[in-house]
Image (cartoon, rainbow, N blue to C red; front, side, top):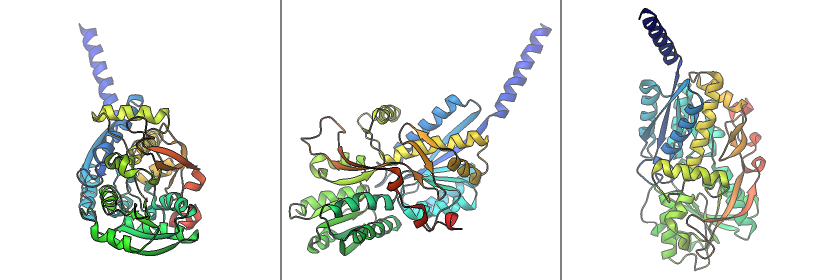
Length: 402
């Protein structure tokens, strides 16, 4: 009996020692849970982060990864309050996702000041790796420069040389309009006008009438999510495309195409860095994501894929350091370790925080061309990683220029 008691006591000591050695990492998915970006990010991004955390913990028993989520409601003040609460009180180590460039730029500064980590997948402003770059931030999935040089350049090269912009009136829309106008003019086209609309507007009639009267060959939609869906649908009602003008969806997601339907979206040219039907790895991950969300038939977006891949790479860096405490050190390790995941493949994180990978120029299929549910795109071109994003020297990032 005495020997049994000693053995039990030793087991308890070992067990207690194991629990004490376990490192806890806390990740906050700061996203749009209820408005125009909820479908392309939102609950689907939370699922993607949880998948990455579970896979990591299955192979790293000495780490415990907790996932929490919050709704920034597309308001920088609310997003900032949540970020401060998470970092100061909840002891969050990483904030991820954050569609809406206004919120993302605010979180970028908070994260820098508190020496935590911010992996942005949902917001587009290229300023996050330009003048506003930070040693604590990684911009993972896409940005406005990439969109402009993918979609904008392709359309100008095929005859769309006069543009009118319909622009969401906040940081993201301004950046996308700016970057696309530069590409249009660099390639011999011209910008004949623009109109800016509030975020999450329901009635685009007055804005579309201005675009229609401009006589521009191309109406560039520098908006996203529900705003893009509504503007495309209402443009069809006004007969804009039948009248000879073309719409350029500068930021269109597969989830948007799913909402629009191929009848409304067919022929749209767009640029993405990930598509659920791209290869066997993407299709296999999509099946697991749909099962985890209990949402058969739901199509994941590149933003949600970027959350999964970004969290996966972050946790590799934390494991290598055996700590998430020093955010700047973790991001430095993320830049040091090559990226490799089943969705974006092999890549790198550049000195300015820009994640580098291939991009794809897609065209939305017609209903006749689509062979099965979710069969949305045909690939017009693959843009190599070395050409997909703004050259490092052109970004005005203080981390690079000193």
